[in-house]
Image (cartoon, rainbow, N blue to C red; front, side, top):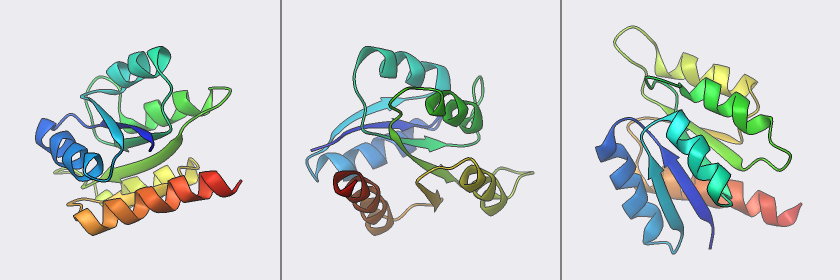
Amino acid sequence: MASILVVDDVVSTTKIVEQLLSVKGHQVICAVSGKEALKIIESKPIDLVITDIVMPEMDGYELIRELHKQSDPPKIIAMSGGSDTLDGEGLLHVAELMRVDRILLKPIESASINAAVMEVLGAESTT
């Protein structure tokens, strides 16, 4: 199965996504920031990155830009629920413009994350 990196500064979110994807047989690694995610990616191959957009230190947009610079970038799913002042759908629209493979609006349901992962990783096997 796939090696998936889940990046979100809300640890409960990473744990829920980790549980949902581990049950499906994926190897799941969690990071609480974009900077931590990049360190992990330097040390091991990752097939898919699922990243939040609104995070301190290095936000999801910066992480997406860094991932696109790689010679063989992983697939990317962006997720967001927005913040007190930012609309989640608007944030995800920007992520779409940055060429992510899929977007998910929080709160995320188990069926939607599993479907998104299957769609993104399935597209990888057909190319």
